[in-house]
Image 1: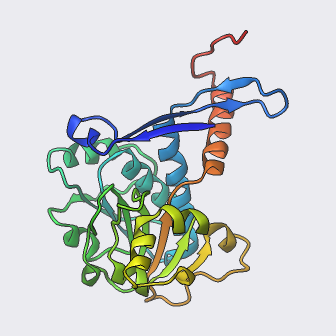
Image 2 (image 1 turned 90 degrees about the horizontal axis):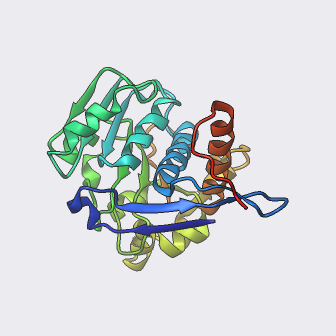
Length: 263
């Protein structure tokens, strides 16, 4: 059971945009077992989803990663991608120049990251030579221009989780192989998809597949090295559930967390 609130104005207050918690219940008895903090858990599960999408859709030769956004969601995107591809260069662009250096510093020690992490002043500078692009913003307008993308790039779009938000140009969505975590969620909530449909750039049938359909191999993903692919994630309750169960198991194994007696 997840309770969450998203407050975009929090970025100006210097605190996380999203807050929440996930209540883990014993499936047999219904007894509460844990209450993980929702923001960190969401960052972990969306990082894992982006890693899976990258592994299934990005070219195996991918070496350069661009990250647009400098929040906690951005950090786990970088960590996830670096676990499934041998990334040699990370280019970072954030809207707030003061927060970007702190983000780069925070990346140190996060998974198998390369030594080369560069701050770019413009989105185009970040994505122009990228094999993989990760967006992690709550922007209501595209955070890069379609013309700035190189051929064959794979894009993980996370953060635009309501209909007013849209971080990817409609032209990019229209020419890309579009994969989502859930058709129902994407067509109901993802502004990148719903606004492209409303403006006639695509139809609902443009969604190629749910990410889970690619895992068994029954549905084909990338078909050429110069094809642009997009994974649009809204986030699903089942992802929270799996992440919470794994976190609880790890906490028990490592003896971490604070235990409160339930009467």
